[in-house]
Image 1 (cartoon, helix red, strand yellow):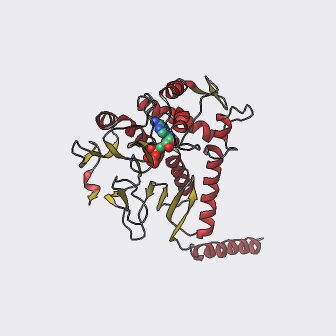
Image 2 (spheres, protein in one colour):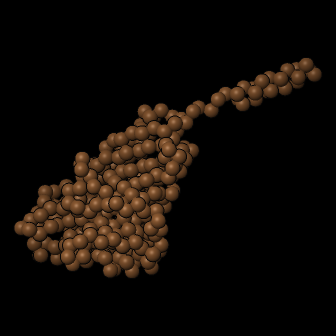
Image 3 (cartoon, protein in one colour):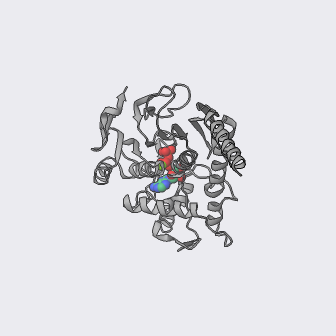
Length: 340
Ligand code: ADP
Ligand code: MG
């Protein structure tokens, strides 16, 4: 009996010793990029897993997200809802997206509105081609615009009019950044930078042991590609950043510039002196949706809204002479900015 229990104790001891001696898998920074939601993503994180494994997991999350929210995929849940498919039932992520969008809609006094779908399409920024709708068309589409026209009942989305269509592209990239970041946190990854279509969330430090540094575009037309110009560089401390601007997705017809952010009150593309809005928040979905809302509100109304709600924001606008001007909201620490 004594010998038996001594052997068991010895066995346990050897096991414990072994466990202590097994070296922890080494963590290193990995980097990968891919495509999603009609745009690109770039991710850097510190992990002991291989890049193949992490990228596979991220791609699965993003693929599942697309199956819910892509208006370009006819089989997605959102497309089925927009086509009034009676068989569709919503899962908790979809319900959360609608509820969160409603929250930002109320907070922004209606400027952020995911029922702008038919107007976005009419102006040629959806799956259809570019065109300028008549005032009559705009007036009829305004009748089916407004977040009071949709509500969640159980796992169904109820519309007050079957013509109502939703478009979550003003929040989708930020929301999916949060999904990937939440997955990293659950997996014990504590240092990461997730960027999807320009919306970013960071945690911890980069490979050099420093806070992540993110560039903010100079809002000049077609500022992409090789000669990408930056207006500012900012350090992110466990935070997200999202920029909306009239300088990227727009078209010009008869000398008039139409940008892809729609004012849900007038039915017209937002036109004001704001060139870009950059919002900082823990949650990337929040930053993304609020940036879109500010583009609708314009400079003065945004200043009020941002200070009332204590939102960190960096606005770039043009003055009467067409010069680029900057505005920092009261709670933003300007010191984090290295302006060009
Ligand atoms: P970007 O960051 O490229 O400027 P946004 O995040 O502002 O883009 O999203 C713009 C997209 O949001 C549009 O293409 C459209 O699908 C949708 N959208 C347009 N106007 C609104 C609005 N007022 N509220 C919510 N979503 C909108
Ligand atoms: Mg947005």
